[in-house]
Image 1 (cartoon, rainbow over the protein chains, first blue to last red):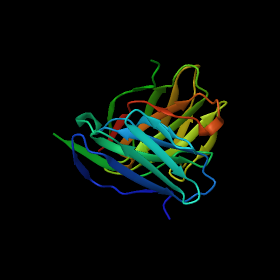
Image 2: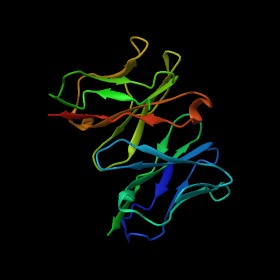
Image 3: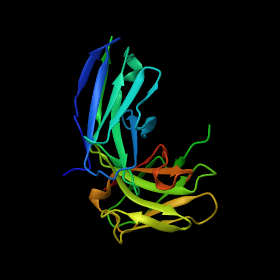
Image 4: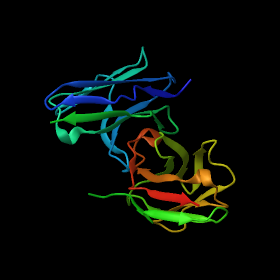
Length: 108
Length: 116
């Protein structure tokens, strides 16, 4: 079973739309969780950490459900600049495990 | 804003040759990592390094690979006897160690390695 699983997409949404990505992880002992974004042929860049109580950063909201081993990312009011691949990252304590990423294209 | 830097940005080598990829982590960070990403695939962990020694390595990180922190700023990945399947983007990352290995990691821009 893969450590981290994501729907690869692609998601094509109009500007202004709300879009949600989901991610599941296999190791119940995982300790830290993140969403990174990766533009084509660039390095992963931290979008936000994911906390147990859920957290929000502007248009972005992350949720963690430890019982279901499930992480989500909600993007409101999508901008053209949000087009990228969104990487779910889970750390059980010794290394980062990356999902394959979910591709988002925001269309004018 | 401090950032991780990597050199070279692109390295082309012949199969069987040795390459050294260089990284300068963020200056006050204590934990260092190497990852690779084969084109079209996910980012994969190779190795973590703390207190001048390897703390964790993946199955990918076999005897062909080695890491070193030769001075107070550089962190290198050496790949001996390169193979075609070593062609990938190699990312260096560092974290400040506030929470050990669970901290946020900051990634460098990567070195694209092409083995011919």
